[in-house]
Image (cartoon, rainbow, N blue to C red; front, side, top):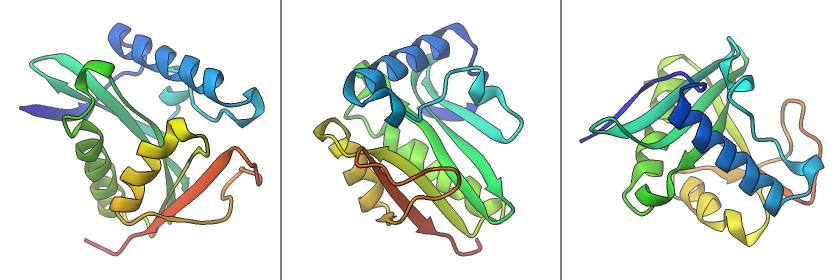
Length: 155
């Protein structure tokens, strides 16, 4: 059974997954368009970080960053290579959306890439009701970024 729980982004297996994530982002997008966070940035007080595990084995991660009292952002969604195709990303996304709703956020946003590498992520978010939107928070219009949002209704 897959369990999603808050976790420490500096935990060794998680740190390795986040390093892999950052390396892929820099290999896929220009440096100025990479908005992924390392484990130290994910340890900020405004961010809640979760991992998905099965029998203690890391399958993926995701985070929720508070932007304002009514607005939050999804950060660092990543599934391990071995766990891809098992629904880990869907489970994590549902968990984050439910948590954002429980916390009373009115809107949940995210930034992902425009390259083909990010197409599965864009499809995942669209399947769960996210639609494209203008840049939010501190983001600027960027041809390498797609911004998406999901309005949240109270639980």
